[in-house]
Image (cartoon, rainbow, N blue to C red):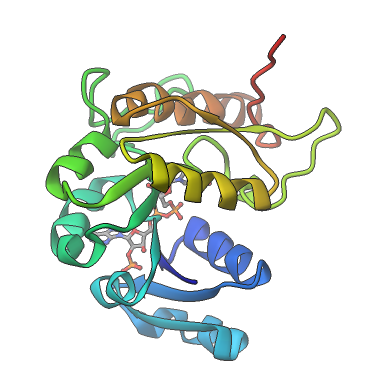
Length: 213
Ligand SMILES: NC(=O)c1ccc[n+]([C@@H]2O[C@H](COP(=O)([O-])OP(=O)(O)OC[C@H]3O[C@@H](n4cnc5c(N)ncnc54)[C@H](OP(=O)(O)O)[C@@H]3O)[C@@H](O)[C@H]2O)c1
């Protein structure tokens, strides 16, 4: 299975290596393939770097790991290439305003998440919110004494969520499916909560876990 990773930031880098280590072929997308030449050289046969659209086109499953404010434009451009494909959406709609007392600002509202906007732009793509509620250093095989942390997911397509679930479990996560795309209104703001101890106390070493009776 070929995984398209759209994004050359820390999330793209982390998940690209994570998928490679789990045995997948990874095709990375960026506006500037030159910047990932070293990665391509290091990975050899198991990976390749190209532009956003080509990476989406050539992949069976896509991970969207681009800056939140660029996501809508990118999804518009690649829409034809993600028809019928599971798109794991790691983006958060963080605005350019600085945090206030450690609280990030979003350019979306509690009545409309970024993932819902992306789903409207590309109605045939199978978006699943995933990887958005934790820092990149814990995305792959997180180790906590208390046990596995919880990855909150949502999306409209049940088969795509099964694919997401399988991948997330193999990445060391317990998965909590919160239903349809509207649930991204609750999942995306977890990023604000996750970052607060970081901005306030420089503590970035946590993840969420849903305790159940
Ligand atoms: N950092 C974390 O720990 C973390 C955790 C959870 C979720 N997230 C979310 O994951 C996403 C990626 O985060 P990140 O920290 O890895 O990197 P980032 O700096 O938020 O995004 C980098 C990517 O966005 C693309 N990009 C930026 N501006 C663009 C524009 N104007 N037009 C087109 N593409 C543009 C870049 O394209 P090029 O490759 O062409 O430069 C690059 O691939 C974000 O939405 C973030 O909120 C981050």
